[in-house]
Image (cartoon, rainbow, N blue to C red; front, top):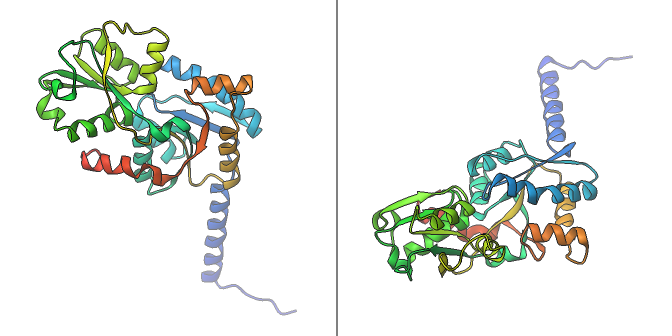
Length: 290
């Protein structure tokens, strides 16, 4: 019987092809454990409280172990997803845009809260003399994290539209790191005003965690798209679809759904897409933050 000989070059090419195929298959293999993180826009204890029932729910819906991994700051949330150290991340609009740019478009936003289609920020103060954005000139003003959509990027964008430049017009620009920390800074008098996520402000007011006879919201921004749950594009499409459906199936009609949605400050989750965040990207580029 005649044997077919494979030249060393062809053997090398064949080996490389098989290695590439194996690598692609590995990249498209569903993770054994779904690793989840979130931008630290609130205190670690609050983030853990919000994550616990969601983790349990996702485990039951996906049939796999789910682990919540906290990160130290917004940049770490971006890097952990881009480098595939986690599989699912809760991003603000700006951190999604940062992850999209950092990964070369290799991240996919799956769902957002219905509220995130028309999100807003508020400016708060304990100073009776501050009634409008122009009154912030010469004051100490706090944003949240520098990478926060609702606590920095969009408030800054609306300030600039109003003719107020933080670096030129404020006495001092501060960064608290988180929305609840901004409220604390204003309430304690460390700064005369601050900008933050409207849902955190509303929650603090509802829970009577802030004295509204002293601290008040004096300006609410126009609406914009904000938070979403994002995955890496290398995640198999079937798993992406299961995760998205798990979120959109959440309903306040069930005790489990009610608890999760209330903790997430959501009426329901709806599908989203990258194009929704083009306005955020434009605002970031115009403010030289991207």
